[in-house]
Image 1 (spheres, rainbow, N blue to C red):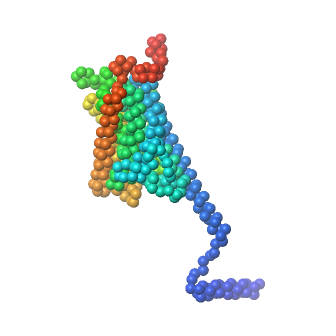
Image 2: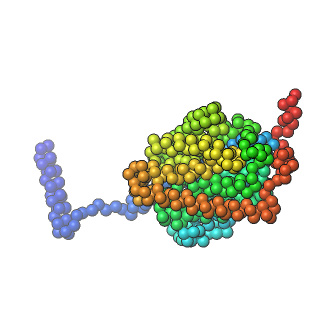
Image 3: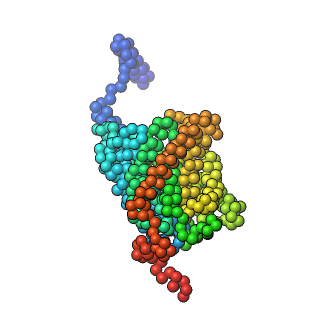
Amino acid sequence: MRSRIVTIFILAALVLGAGMLGAEEMNETPTPRISADVTEQLESFKVLLLNGRVIADTVWVLIAGMLVFFMNLGFGMVEAGLQQEKNSVNICAKNFIVFAIASIAFWFIGWGLMFGDGVGFLGLKGIWMLGGMDNSPATGDMYRGVYSAISWAGVPLFAKFFFQLVFAATAATIVSGSVGGRIKFGAFVIFSFLLVGIMYPITGHWIWGGGWLQERGFWDFAGSTAVHSVGGWAALAGVLVPGPRIGKYNPDGSVNPIPGHSMTLATIGVFVLWLGWFGFNPGSTMAAIAEDIARICVTTNLAAAAGALAATITAWVVIGKPDLSMILNGSLAGLVAITAPCAYVEPGAAIIIGFIGGILVVVFVIAFDRWGIDDPVGATSVHLVNGIWGTLAVGLFAAAPYAGREGQPPIGLFYGGGISSFANQVVGVVTVGAFTFILSWVAWVIINAIMGIRVSREEELRGLDISEHGMEGYPDFESYMLK
């Protein structure tokens, strides 16, 4: 037995020595050889992993886009609930048709203007209809140079298009509630096409399409400015051109409140919007990155909660009652404010951002009323004011490790960063606001000159449901209530 063990050790030593001698003679370290079959299997495994990741990212992006699409119901319910019963059909019709308009406008012209390669001001390729390919996994590297600005997202081209479409539609939906109660349905349809087809994509190109603001270092992760402020500026112009609703102001300028007809509908709508925002903000990663989407969900939720609490406290102090409409708008204000910085800030900062947003919305709802700006749903206070605030918050609260690295915004001013990042945010807010407001004002004025944008006094007093659509939201509602 011992002799056999000794023999095995001797043979092993001889083999090992021969191998080392051969390696020295060849002056190289021996490497294991992998058969062609194994190499082919490894390559197949890599392709399988890549395809699995693309599938996961695509499913996540599409589900997030569907959640944002569902927000159209939320906007419709909020706007209908906060306006008079006689205009409920009109509000629902506008919120429904606006997505159809956006789908066609963004397909034919908006997508190319926003993401097509071009100059710093606008995209010049892929205009008039969605065509060509980019370098996403679904199309490979066959063609480059059409949609380079969105090629960073590793999902198929149509997934990118759908996700960006639902954002574009959101900007137009914001306008609907602000101009409610006095605007012709046809005028709103035309303006919505212009907003989604031209105005929104141009400023979107500046911010997300490789345009001059993006090159400058302006940051807006999910659209506090790109979506919400743009919709808010367009809404403000739409409010100012036709003026306030009949009966909103007395001859001395004092305000007559015109309450909404269903706070129940408004509450349901805000819950739908809060849910949809979990697609709006985390979905903007356009990839199923577990840590990022989970953290963004938390910052988004905390800001909404803080906004609702701040609006409750502020309304209680200023108005004397915890007004439900203010509470609802407070949560929306927090959501709008966190939309730009949601990926770049800590949860604690998200609470501060949302809390300030909740205060701002109460202050500006009251201020706009006193300034003669009749916004029935407070959309300008929610989306315009807090879109501005949220965009500026990036330059104040962006924190490591979510900021400061390549491909991320610089550290915010409150975390030891310089003034330059905040200054870039100010430049973006001012230029996008000026461009959108001026063009929206011009568009409303031209539409007014061609076809008129305001219904007649008799039609407004009777309600847009009957005058514009020939039906009522609640048939025989008054007679039923008198029984």
